[in-house]
Amino acid sequence: MILVTGATGNAGSAVARALARGAGVERVVLLSNASAPSGDTSNAITRYHIESEVAVRKSGLNWSFLLPRTFMTNTLQWAPQIRSGDVVRAPFGGVRVATIHPDDLGAVAAAALTGEGHAGKAYPLTGRSRCCRASGWRSSLRSSEAT
Image 1 (cartoon, rainbow, N blue to C red):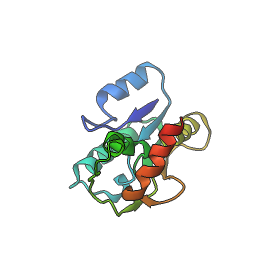
Image 2 (image 1 turned 45 degrees about the vertical axis):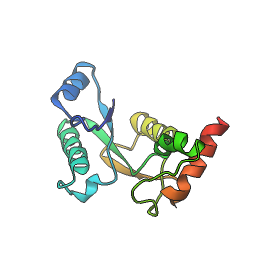
Image 3 (image 1 turned 90 degrees about the vertical axis):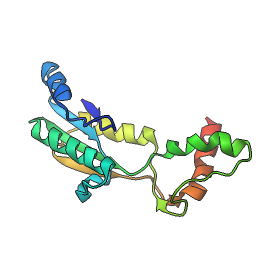
Image 4 (image 1 turned 135 degrees about the vertical axis):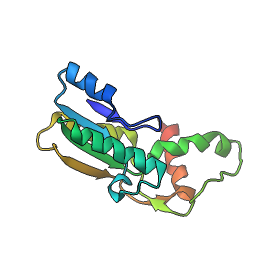
């Protein structure tokens, strides 16, 4: 079973555990976040990822955690502004981050779910190179227009 931690609650909820038991699930891959290992519960987003990880660990199932930072496709939200010639304003424009494409994340999730040797492991996930938002949107838009 692949679980996604979301802002509406933790993915390790009693409902998810009951569904897993009823379906005979033996493995869980949780899409968490790279901030979870920090233990910083003062940050709401980090807190719900931490709570989900704790619940999954307590589930008794074999688990793996995927810990991405940001997704390449998040920059696509700016496409209409850029195409219309508008200026994109976003926080932390100069911070360099190695974003990951959702297809790559899916491939890792499938490998962790179906392959051997992944139980009890957490995998930090990044893209190939770090870039800042100010330049990163250009490559994401080029990729989206090519497909």
